[in-house]
Length: 159
View 1 (cartoon, helix red, strand yellow):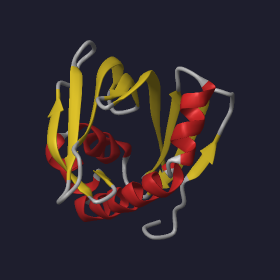
View 2 (cartoon, rainbow, N blue to C red):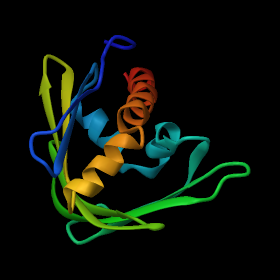
View 3 (tube, rainbow, N blue to C red):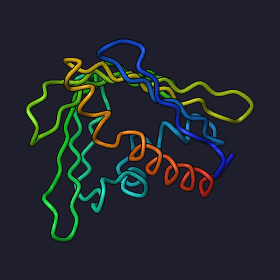
């Protein structure tokens, strides 16, 4: 499926965005790529920035912090706390941006495997419709598509 998968974005409610994509990899590989700093640094980025700080304490109540840096760019940071982890099929966490006081977003990620492929579904529940709409207008679809293309390439190299 490398190179042919597309991200699908839906808005099931006035505060939610659901992102889905199929990856041609076992869900354990996808789970690892979502949770291990050494793998996250190989695919996760922000426009013009790479993931420089990647701290992950993968346990319920544990947290994470990501800082993206690029030449002549302001650092962009995000952090969160894990609320539920059912490896390798489910992660529930809250997240917030360090330089944007938009409140916490609840993120539920489900990984379903069938025939060696993994359906990735991530539902983000934003604190308000305004925050959801701001995120959608900021280029969410383009950004996740580019990130997940890089993730797809990483997963292909792990097989």
